[in-house]
Structure formats: C-alpha cells, structure tokens
Image (cartoon, rainbow, N blue to C red):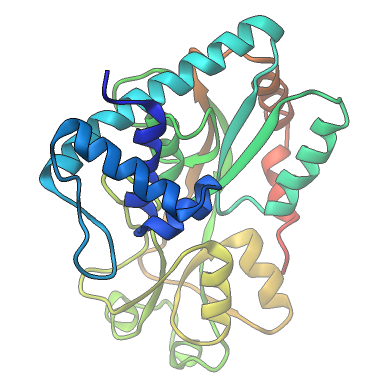
Length: 304
C-alpha cells in the first residue's frame, strides 16, 4: 500500500493552508519533512500532485482526485478511532462542537469550565460557524454537536435535533447614517440605496446561504456577528441584527432601530447531533443546552 493516512493529512493541510510551510506549522513538523512526504508520495504513485509554480502550492488534477477521495478515508479513520475509544471508556477522546456565531463565546467557555470540573479526559474543540455552517460541520463530520443551527437541516438524515428557541431580528443603523432620519417604515428602495453589512456563510460543502440582503445591494462582508455589529455601529452599512443584541447597543445610543416595510422573519435555532454518537460528553452538553430558557440566557450574555 503506497498511501498512508499521514501522507493524506499532509496533502490536506497543504491544500487548506496554501503552502508547505503553513502546513508544517499546523502539523508541528519541520518544512523539510513536509516536502519529503509529498515527494515520496509522488514518487510512489508516479504522479505530480502539486504545481509548485508561484507563491501558493496548487493541486494538480491528480492531486485534487487524491485529496477528494482521501478526505473520505481520513474521516472514516477518525470515526473508527473515536468509536474504539468511546466503547472502551464511554467518554469521547474529542468532542467537536460547532456553535453559530450568534451564541456568545463566553457562554461556551463557561460550559467548558463546568465540563472540565468533572475531570473527564475528553478534549473539547469549539468552532464558530455562520448560517449553514453548523449543518455543514455536522453532516460533513467536522463536528459531533451543532448548537444554534438555523433553518432546515440538509436531506439525508443521520442526525437528531431539538428546538433551542427563536430569534427575532431588527433593522439597526448608526445614528449618523442617512437612513437614521428617514421616514418609517423604511422601504425596499430606501434600503437598497445603502450598503449592507453581511456575514459570510461558513459552509464548505453545502450551498452558501444569505439572509436579509436585497438583490443588487452593495455589501460589505465580514466573518462573524461581532464584526457585523461593529461595522454597523461605525456607520459602514446597515442590516438586521438579533433584537436581543441590538437593543442593548441602541440603549447606549450607538445604534437606532427602524421599522421596515418587509420585516425579516424570526428564525428558529436548533441543537443537532449525529445519531451514531452516544458518548457521555455529548450527552452532558445536550442536557445542559436543552434546559428551559438556555438560549434566552445565552443571548443575554452577549456583550453590548
């Protein structure tokens, strides 16, 4: 067998990070070890996997095919390893939790503190996702548990869900923005004439989603809810924000809330986890987050 999981991990890291040096840093290897691993695999397979011209290492067609199929093997190997350890101890070696960006990071860190107080051996891995990113992380195997997944889940099943609660949205503008003094309700044409602040969908495989944007509207795209809030406070653009967050900032005079003719509908958030995952750490987090009023308390913890 000329392929190894270690070699596939190297190829995956180079493609994601864009260079041999960055991959070496992520994998805690020296750059020469990364170079040797790739060259050895190319020699063994008698194919060129990377086009090394230019500053960024680019996969060849053969390299793309190897990586696409190889990632299935990596996920399968990771799942097998995790299953073996869960059977032996009942506690997962790792629990990967994808949280929608609307959930304050302080809330998750508080939960991590309480979890680690039980002295389990489970390592927690948190990631922040946007829009369809939570579902994408769950169904692709990047996460075992998704907190705050919004909208309908993807077809195919393989996961369980519970309703966390509902988010209401308000249209928020900096006091200095031209729309702050416009007559209410704001019309579609009123809003279309101004730049919108948008948060990029973090999905890797599922089709990216947008919400609250008008067709043809100029946009400034940021990576998370906190950056969107700050951009709107600075008057860089307009857009909808969670009511619980916007009202706190508006009370300080940093935002004003305006009615619109076409209000953004409320959004249901879900807790979701992979059906095959039955570890004790997952069960602990599901029980904590499923508590009555958890979402309301979590959103009130958002910094204003």
